[in-house]
Length: 503
Image (cartoon, rainbow, N blue to C red; front, side):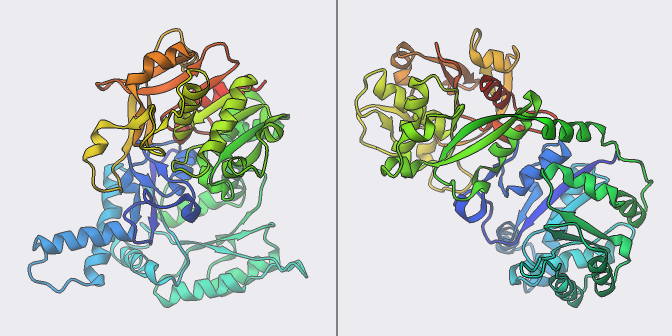
């Protein structure tokens, strides 16, 4: 519609950020351009809005309380008794306003995570209730997203959970202006009427968000129901017909992509696919641009390591192999076995972050002949630490927010696969999240074993960013995470290169 929009995700957990959380707990840790370790929803915001957000766009209970306690310790409250209201709620409101000002935004979309009624979410709901009073009805809008389950026995859409959820909201002082009903199927007229009646909103303010082939269809189905007109009306904005042509084209191409290619996804958190959400989306973006429908074959690296499955059997008929990020000892030997199989059988391979590091370990062991070569992260006593801790990491005594994080400049080496992937660009920026690096002491040996360096950092000493193998169909390792910058209409170059190699 031509308005400047930014988005904030509020996570009521007490962690300061998502950086120290196990992916099994909360899905992937998303990294912003400025090095924020955030909730994975920020990735969706960036992909849908096609903008870069910052660490300030993810607010947690931990951040708010930490800030208030630090102010109290500095004496900024001048002897007051520090309380949830007004001090915590004021801090929340200030953070929201700060983001709005920094982005010069016309509209700020604020998602309060969790479930209405959760004890940890109450201060945030109280803060936005106060914002309605302070800013007025034409400058604020409450949209409640709630679940409409379907009874498996009768197939009936049950609206009671929505009704109770709205009642709980109203009890704490918030009346929704619109309700988005999340359901497996399109909302039946009768269910819509009930939600409107008991939710105290007009029927045209109840929207059906039902299951579709791809999440990228959601804006289209909401637009068909007139949501942008209603939002414009509630916020007193000039209505402009949304420009959705290129978005529709992408979805049409996505649905028409008929060439199926199987990609082995080798990792240690495969039981929760959200652990690799941005990679899954990046493959969809790249696949659509090539008319390919990626079929993901999830392989638990620990099962290879423990001998539950044989690497030859699970990788025999795949078109490509991705060894996924995820540091730590568990599953390491399984990942290395998968890398060896892809290398020896000329299968297109992509190693991301720890996946790249283990590719260096595999080649060091099995090609360069460095017996027991390893990363010092997993084996501190290895005779050949081909992957070692970054110099500055030795001085760090805290885990949270202390990795090499965010967008860093990378110098692309001439006459390499990396140069082809990035269409001849000399300097590129990709987002990082790691502590360990390729050990420069072993570079000469590794290069003799066939590794070619595709990109290095601009900082001194130079750090290895991309590795590749000569005489291989496609063998590429990336220390940064290119998936974080992939967009539906602008796929990440590395994923485009990998998917093109599957043809």
